[in-house]
Image (cartoon, rainbow, N blue to C red; front, side, top):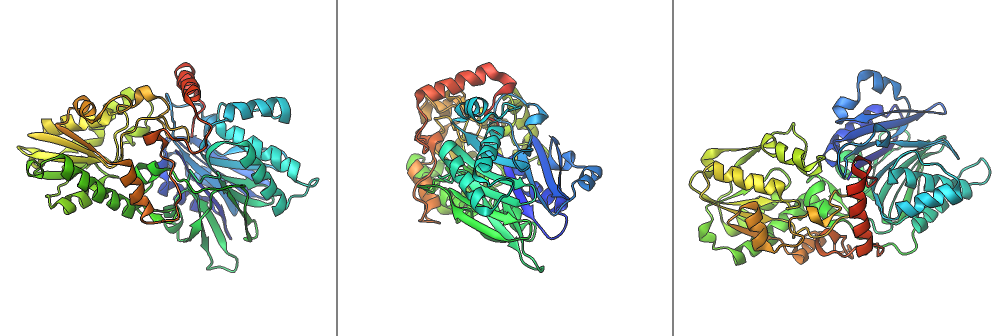
Length: 494
């Protein structure tokens, strides 16, 4: 999972992109990069690390220009890869393009072979993002008339990308001398939204993964980019848009609302915060059916993303709510840190328990989800060490039983604690006295209640139903083998 942004402004945009990446830092802490355009030249800087560490004053001064793109990236398998796989990516032909991508292609291997053998394009990394960039560049070259480029050619190229590429992707491309173009896959699995600042003589425009990047930088949220749609912003601030997919169906990733997105974001017409409150309502009903409420003394969230659900659950069940864990905000999110050993080691660095809130009490811990179980097991142990009498555990998400192939780091079933276990078995594995999961139908209803136009969800990590229709057991087996064999060179990187 990554965060991407693109801006066309009336003045230098380097600081604006930097600020927006800070607001998207939760989507990735492995690497960050910015590319700007000025006087027919691209300027770029990217490196491993947090935004605040990657960019120094000298780097910012070198990023001249009134348009640019940026990305924060997280690694999905093994450990860190080469900084060459940090984004933005760049190609010089046909027009010069810098490119940022959030998501994952499911047919990147086949596309890479096509690029080598048919399109005659060379790939320098193991990144599916570079494959997608080169497919876009090739189709742009085919659609353009000679050395000229217009909006029609860009829309034609995006349509061709949709026909060739499979998977989940949100893209922002900066084309030299032309402007920026953003587009989403025909299912809208990965988010992308549009905002404007119309205070000056010419409107400024921003595309970003989440609305918080827009509003936090003083832009007005306009709308989400539709599934399959392409949005063009020219260098002089003109806006063009067109549907480029033949049969788009809005199928957003349900896990975005559970875990990844910031609660103050609006995504696909849905307030993430309100969705999490709704999840708490539904989870409370399930808790009431599964536990004797008299056995629960207090409800506690695992900070931070589960807090809205935990508060709403406690209110609905008329149970006391307390903050029993304090989060160290200078430690990265454990779910997206490379390596199981590093994840386990970081849990107690990341959280500390307030003993007086646990001592002698039966506590109900509420977390957003349980994926590998490593963090949950450590948290339950911390609660017991702090003096809890009994520890019950509730998950605002259903059991994660299947790999996600669209950009979230859970590619093999062997890593998923619930893959071959029922609730009682998972409870024993994490050391809890009881475990309650959210129902999938309730999770999806929590989101759909806020936007009835959502036709379906990408919930494959819960139910194994892959919306792109190209994933089978053989694909997943091959993916698992490639991860074990590739180590640090695993290409499923965004």
